[in-house]
Structures are given as structure tokens and as C-alpha cells.
Length: 489
Image (cartoon, rainbow, N blue to C red):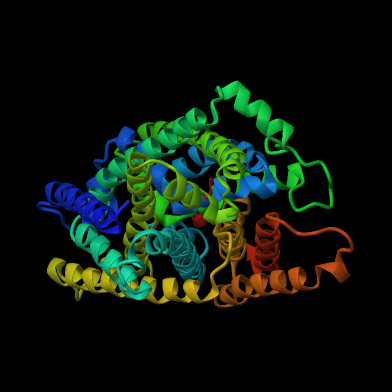
């Protein structure tokens, strides 16, 4: 299909997003930007969060990883289910009881200002790295299938896409993203199921026939029982629980949308609905990956990993499927960045700059400052995406999960210490603990063949990081004062 036509479709899709943004951001203010005026519909939030949770990394990397790990990602998915239940019934009641705008304010109330700033700081680092990695993955594919042939350089593609995102999030923030995410999730899921249905037709198979074929080729294996393997079931299962606890329950981007729902009960319904839909969708992505690896040899496609999905669709499937794939891919792209930039702006303004605590800033001054910060994070995204381009990893889902282990571990340790103990901290020492633990994890991972023998660290590095932070905080703690005990879960 002509790259020019594909480019025109991309522009048309963006025009639709701008229309949604215009309709939802009228009369928006800082409360609209940060928490959607606490009036978001829980069903829209739940459905839209599917797109935010999945992102371009899931759309491309999960099917691509089937060739290497078969359906092993399903082990993590089982853990996800238990993790979402824990977030709904442990963390959400706490956030609603304290009426939080930023969830990291809990750390300030419970543990002190340095714990608060450390938590917010690690969120900023983790979300910056994780979201730009996801954004890079999709931009890189758009570059390869459309823009290289038009002579558009990668840096300009990234700049234009970030400018587009700024245009529809600049004013409305969360209030707008709740609606745009719903649209994007719809398009992404339609693309998933349409591509799977067409591949089944091309293979001439029913769903049971295709699963049997995947089983015979070793593509449908879910469980790994080798204790030394990074993919050992219990490692993946427990890691799945803690990935959700940290990357959803302790992540301002995800919780910012969830706590924008008016009541706790509706917010919990939102999260449990998300869990059900996400389980079905992620299982479907694994199934799609199996279909891609069944079809690729028949079509002479040698690509693997992140490259197999676009290689099959853009090189061997009809124009209608290519258009569906492009729209779904772009729909996976925008939630990777729009909510992240909005949440980072919220965290930096509220938790680092403290604009709600500053009497010298009137409402107009707060909005001007928020817009400058929003623009600043968009520029940071540009720099980091170009950095990932220089590295060019073959499978970004592994990179994203590894980054999460290092950057969300301190958040896990901070929240766990606050909720599981009744002790106070020596405030000035908290940053040393939260920075020191990831450094120790890096040393442990680098020398694991000498320290751990045949055992290899996998996603459990996230828990190791959290445990080290918890232990370090306990070492610098003392008996809790009575007035702070009331905010523990």
C-alpha cells in the first residue's frame, strides 16, 4: 500500500483525536487536568485503561515473544489477576480515605517529606524510561513502514507525534484522556481481533485446529518448572502480582485515572472490570503470536521478535488489513505517552514543586506553571526516545520489565514499610536507602553467576529490590508516634 495513503490515514485519525479533545476540554482547569474533576465514569476509565496498560509494547512484543517463550507470558498474567484484586481492596481504600490527588502524598503523611519526594522521584524516573521505551517501539515501526520511504527522519517523526500528543492533552489532561483512551482502546482491540481472524482464514484453520498446531510446534507451552530458569512458574506468578501492585497500584499515571472516579465502590468496579478484560485481551495477544509464527514460514517471513507482526501484515496481507493494523498500532502508541506526560506533569507540579502548598501562586499562575512543566516533559520524551533509537534493542518488552524492576522496587519498599509497620524514619537518610538498593541489585545481577551459581535472576529482581529498601528503611527507623498510625492500611 502507498506510504502516502497510510500517512493520510494517520493524519485523519489524529484529527479525530483533536475533535474529542476539543469537546472534552472546554472550561477545563487544574482539577480537570489532574483528577478529571473527580467525575469520570468508571466504565469509561476501566475500558480506556486497557489501552494504557497494554500500550505498543504489548501490541508488538507479546505476540513477537511467542517464538522464544511460547505462551510463557501467561504465567505472569495469572499473577496479574491476583495483583489487581490486591490493588482494589488494599490500596484503593487507602487512597480514597486520604482523598489523594497524588498517591505519593500518602508517603508524606505516613513517613515524611524525604520519603514522599523519593517516591515521587522514582515514579518520574520509572515512568519516563518505561513510557519512552514503549513510545520508541511504535514510532520505530511507523518509521519503517511509512516515513522512511517518504524521506522523513526519525527525530522529526518523534517530534511531530509528541507535538500531536501535546495538542490534545495540553488543556484537558485526565478529563480528556479518559475519552481519548476509550477511542484508542477500541481501535487497538479491533485491530487485534481482525488480524487474528484474518490469519485464521489464511491458514484455513479453526481456533481448535490452530491451537493443536501451536501445541505440536511447541508454541502453546505455558508453564516452566525448572527452578533455575528465569521463567520458572513461581517466579513469574509472584512477579506478576508485584508488577501490578507497583506498576498500577503505586503508579500515579494509572491511579490518577482510577481515583478520578467519584466513589471507592465504582473505582473498585473499574479495576475488577479492567482485570477481566485484560485477561481476555492478553490471552488473545498470545494466540495472535502463535498464529503469526504458524503463518510466517508459509509466507517466507524470517523476521522474529518485535519485527514479525509488522513484517507479516505489511508484507503479505491485503490493504484493508494493513489499514486496520496501522490504526491499531497508532492507537497503541498514543496511550503510551499521553497519560504518562500528564501524570508526570501532575507528580512534578504537586509533589516536587508543591504548587498546591504555595500561597504565592494564584490559580492562573498555577496553570501557567503546569503548562510549562507539561511542555518540558514532552521535550524529555523526545530526548529519551532518540536515546532508545541509538540502543535499538530487539525486544522492548524485556527492557521495559527490567527497567520496572529497578525503578519500581523502591516504591514497593516505601509503600510496604508504611503499610506494614508502625515505625517512623530518620527522614534525611531515606534517599540513601532508596538509591542504594537498586545499585546493590545491579551488582547482584552483574555477578550472579559467581554469587548464585546456576540460578538466574528474572522478574523477581523487583521483589529483591523492594525487600532491600524495606530492610534499609527498617534499619533507619524508630518506634512510630501515635498520630501517624491512623494512616496505615
